[in-house]
Image 1 (tube, rainbow, N blue to C red):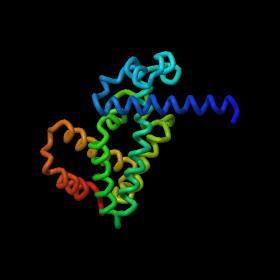
Image 2 (tube, rainbow, N blue to C red):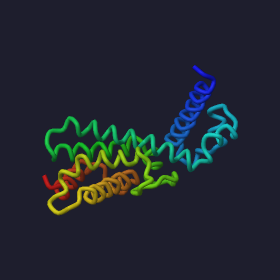
Image 3 (cartoon, helix red, strand yellow):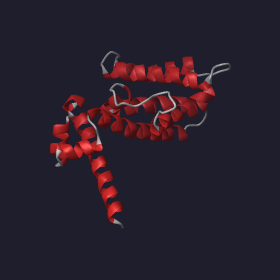
Image 4 (cartoon, helix red, strand yellow):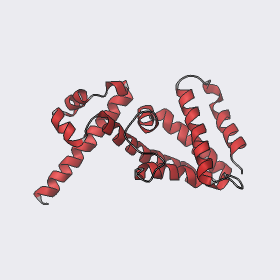
Length: 192
């Protein structure tokens, strides 16, 4: 291995450590607790080393969001792969989405609530975000209904899921009706 390859491997390892530490700290204490000073202390590198990887907290949030998007896409595809038929796939997709949001609140915030400097719904949207949307579209496109663009239907269904995730997390919706909400969403929006 050349010196350059070793340096690149070490740099990539430090970057993964910074992202993992930021994510861990955010999940434990919230994003307000994630500062470059605290991250530098936790990873035992100086702040200048941290800044050599990321220009600041915004870029770190963006890196966590991209990692989360890849994980969400995998979770959605995993949940829908075992489902039999369009209705079962859409139901599995909705449950997997809501489970991901509930199980990874700081990552979900990085993806959809905080400014990570990432472009959505544009040509320059990063691939992990495009892939997460594609994971939704794969199951939802087939139930959009006649005359409805699959991408537009996916956006509306996604917005409904995001609303459910956000309102549930904020304690605005009673938890005992969570399953029924998914059933209503699938029954009323999806053409199956």
